[in-house]
Length: 267
Image (cartoon, one colour):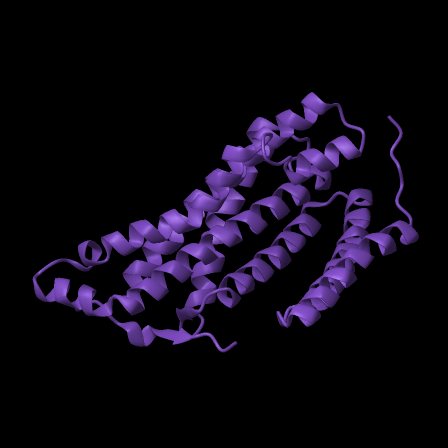
């Protein structure tokens, strides 16, 4: 099947939908018009830039470039984890925790898939490494951000309950166990829901893209199953690690609740 190329005119017509949505937002006083325009502009610029970068990477396969791009993606994802929290750990702790969780879960799972499942030769082949890392970072970032946000918000709201449990002799891990468990659930529920409705309610993005590009449907399905499993694993491991470490950081060595380590994000 021949791939149908899209022209600037085609994309401009699609952009009119965003313009119409922004105008409706202005009329309804939703306050989202400017955000829509900024997000749309960022989408175009960022995707065009990554398209140029990928073109260069595909022409010069070298592990150094893959590592550099991975680091840029990791730092950007770590920053977004911090930005999406209403209450975050003060200083660099929030960024460090999110970035470390992303690194451990995403890099480990992606390397496993590249070397064992796909068996790409070499493993750093940009055609496989960059798209898989992008999918992993994007989804794992959401899970970690949701989990940490739920953890810090709930700990702040239920601080009296946690301190009462500590006064009754409970260990910090026990006193915050319910909050920790619900925070992990919050981070994992979106990706579990995405798996549950894949193929029935929605066709996932990667599968849709492959089919539009002319790939055989069953081949696209196989890759999408692989992607869903690896993204879910990465999101789960990353969220569990981030929330567990965040819960520990809420207490000091003397087992006191330290909510002074949190700061409210300025909108």
